[in-house]
Length: 388
Image (cartoon, rainbow, N blue to C red; front, side, top):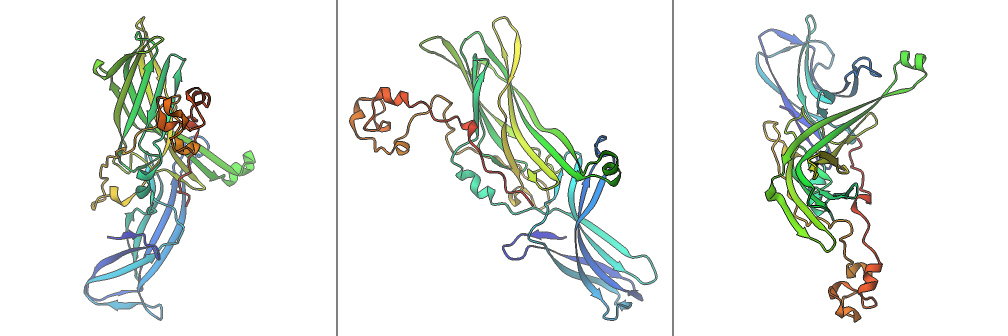
């Protein structure tokens, strides 16, 4: 059974081809071949028919004659090891919901002179060995979005990292605050959306008829969605100076599908772009009994493939990602840190309530005048290194 090896020097596909020959058999050659295929199904609009295209083909001869003629093979069982080098840049295996965009298989051929060739093949998966797993715990902050619904409800949603391993479970932390106790939180819905953007060369007929050079297709899938009802035990009521306020702090697990056929990894190539977003919506009930739903800003993140989530039998191992960092404060609740202001914390501001956070040239009134830190959802994040 072939396996993919990703080393720093020479990545290759290794394995062996086992075959048994009866007595008196003559063959021309035995070859193995790694084939990569691009398969985009029709969408009923711009892509009128399935598009199939070969992306790579690497061969290795296991047995042949110097004169290219046939030769006898000894009777019995034979094993032919092979090692097919991979190019430095190659497309990953990309499969998922109702698609098999890019796939690989190892094909072995026993060529005969006077009869049909014997061809057997086995599908394999090839992925880039990503270093994201070693880096996601060192991120400086958790991805967080926050805002308000019609100036009556405030919210904050966060997840542990922008990079989540394939098939993993990760916590989603939500905080909702209502300015009036007449508003109740009934339920939240956590959803992971997957977006496919396909760009292909136009066919000759499309180019002549419509004068176009490329065609595009856009598809959206929901790979995870779950509704969580909120009971009274989740609510935390508190009084403010101006009006009553009700706050809910909820943490739920989002579970990525542990299946190659139900989810795709995030990828970005010339032809295929797949992206993912976390979407949280909340159901509220006002004083009149009317139920309304509000949706928070979505959080873009990357799903990456890693050997640690693939078992020996090829199945996906569920992995739970824990957030070991404290989530950032809500917008408007930030405080100034002396490292950002060049202060050591000892100075004339000792009379303020937060003496270690106030620079020596400032007082409590000056601290408020500087304003809060920028909102986290305005920060730009680096693009994933998935371009093959």
